[in-house]
Length: 536
Image (cartoon, rainbow, N blue to C red; front, side, top):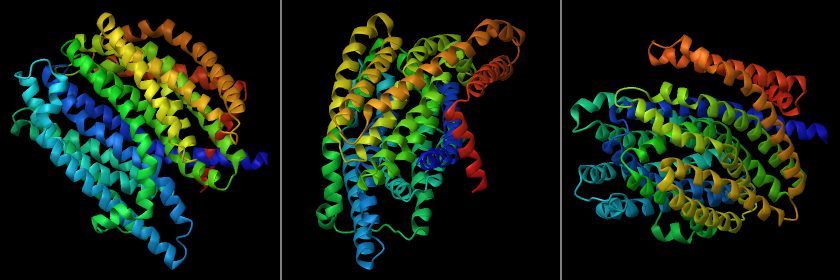
């Protein structure tokens, strides 16, 4: 039995390794994309306008596309796949795929068309003065990027098909293409557009289209195709009706979660010029780490958790959930401590260029320290959520999301005046912590899941990582200023990059040494998982 558990833990790591590498490149390119934005736009009003304009289609993408795939489509498609061996089952499954494709395309095209018409009313929420240059530019940029919702929703559907088949690499590669296209479009088109923000906007819609197109051949290669069916069949298909039933209550909770972003953005734009942009730059750094660990592991474990739940293999379910949270602690907690010490240098290394000056670094760092403090809790939320979705329980995360929304907004409103952007970031971290506690409490009501054991094991391991991270932080904290001063006066890649690299090596050397000295079981499994992947 123990051998089976270790094999499953190895499986999580092995599957996650290749996706983690792709996600790492994606997030690095995402940082380059934000660095490009920082160079051309800085923390100016135009930067705020672009950020708001990009957030509008992204809000609905996260609400409908990503939410529908993770919560409803993958579990439903997995159910169909179990009977797809027979000709009748294959046809039913293909009909479900076609119906979902038709439904997604039809609804997003209608929604985007209406959104482009009413864009000025939507953008008015974020600006005090509707006759300002920032407001008018935000309207133009939003209309350019709104169709991104259509193509990225189709891309999300293709990703759902591939992930349900346990094929992760194509979907992991598409964000790399997206970020590369946005960066290239900015540099190539900026001299020919009214401002660099419009060049970036063109890159966004182009990159989203490529994300969908790139995954289609892999769907076809695995003997599935996509075709339009009638609207009536799309709405009446049993599979799509199941999907709609599953995502119905979740959209309420997800709406609350996404409304956090919208209300926080509205508070940020009213708090002063550049505050919104500093929050976005800070979040980009946080998402680099979050994407590598939480999103990767969450993506990998959902199909397996769904299978365990359907087969009533709850011991394997509990073990996978526990191991996944420990992996989060192993990655997220040490990086949090390092980032708190070296955050200003990281920000300068990534963003300092052109219009992103010393004041921009200071403004972003004030926000980043509070964002990064909540990294582990946000990461754990991304792991616990699939445990509910795998059991087709969408009600519990919905309730947690509503409470999270109320706490986050209440704290943001209170803290934004004395702390500005830092207050909004602190509110998010506190609300994420409360959300994690609520999800564990709701999970405890599920008799098949040994939540007490999962929490005890995870909490003890997290505490161990905190102690190790503090010990690893001591030499970095003591030597940081001397190392930075030794390389000052050069360009930012040397003056900031070399100190960041040296302190990271120092931190990692102490941390890894402690793990090996204590014969950390997760480290052993990670190494074995890597060896298994290389042998495969």
